[in-house]
Length: 193
Image 1 (cartoon, helix red, strand yellow):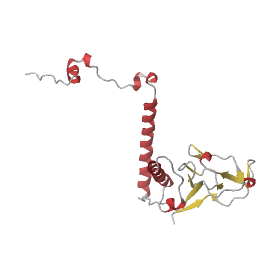
Image 2 (tube, rainbow, N blue to C red):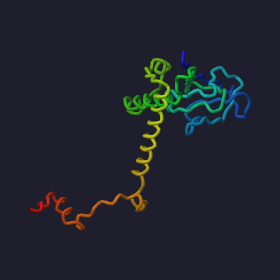
Image 3 (cartoon, rainbow, N blue to C red):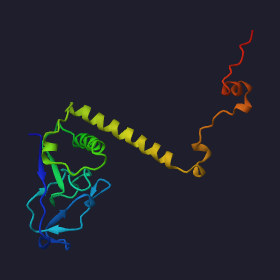
Image 4 (cartoon, one colour):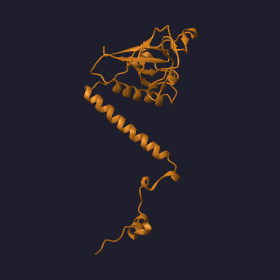
């Protein structure tokens, strides 16, 4: 066994508190922000817990939001599953990256509406497992490409009025070069004889 999957379980309202009594209690996507777990509730009645380092995946509501448990022992509600890792030959970041691509495919197939991810969906998901070094290389490359995509998106969304000369790629002006003007009109200049 290289991983185990822990399904969340809801608690009754009287079992939850906002006074820091017990262990943290998270209910869904609202408890995950920028890849970190946010705690606003606690419980002294835990029965479905995640441990530090588990990969938390929202499986209902906002499906596919993920974060590594950066808190420690916490109770997870039914909108969340926790993937626990038991092998040093497995990169948790690689598994997260792979599951993110799987969730993205589900969103496309379902036209952005996914009712949820079932426990069986994750347990039967075929995940290719290259050697650990290759897993780490794949994660690094995906992160590099995603950073490039983010930069391109930001550049695309930058209003033209906010561009500086350093951000503009100069395009040759046909009027400044007679041969360029002819090429722009679809005419090739005559080669010297």
